[in-house]
Image 1 (tube, rainbow, N blue to C red):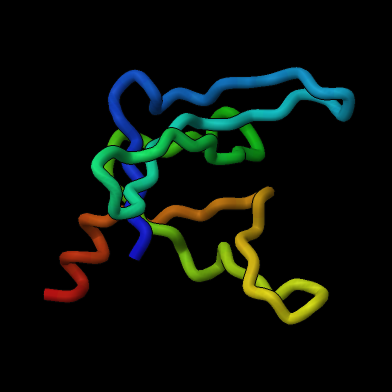
Image 2 (tube, helix red, strand yellow; image 1 turned 90 degrees about the vertical axis):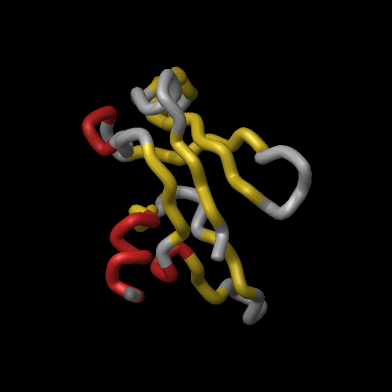
Length: 91
C-alpha cells in the first residue's frame, strides 16, 4: 500500500498556466518508508476535484500496462481511496 497524506493548508487546488492551458493540482505527501514523506502534486481535472484533508491510498485504477509491457502509473489521473474507508471495510 502506498499511503498519501493531504494535510491542512494543502487541501485546496492550485493552478499553473501552461502552453496548453491551465493545469490544476493539489499538494500531497507520499510515504515511501523513509524517515520523511515526499511532497508530490496530484493532478486534478478541475479545482472542485480537490481531496479533503486526510489519509489515502492509491487506487488500482492508477496503474496501466505501457507499450513495452511495463507497469506504469498514469501521470494524468491519480485516483485516491480514503484510508479510513479501507480500514472499516477490512474489519
